[in-house]
Length: 39
Image 1 (cartoon, rainbow, N blue to C red):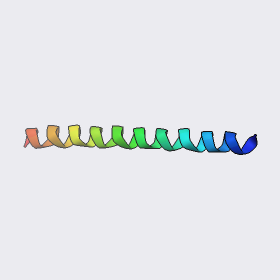
Image 2: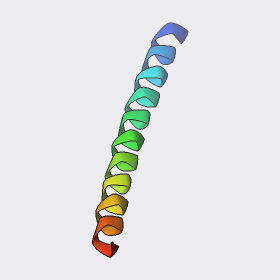
Image 3: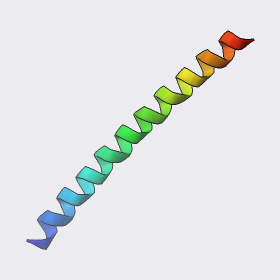
Image 4: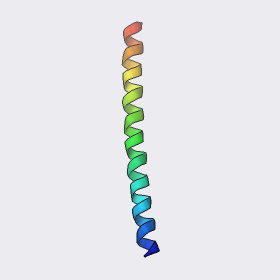
């Protein structure tokens, strides 16, 4: 039973990390486009 819980926890953690990564990339792209617009 504990093994299944660990697998599910790891999977959700992995998905959260992936989502955060996408959010960070999106924010960086937005910032870069804004910065290039100011030049």
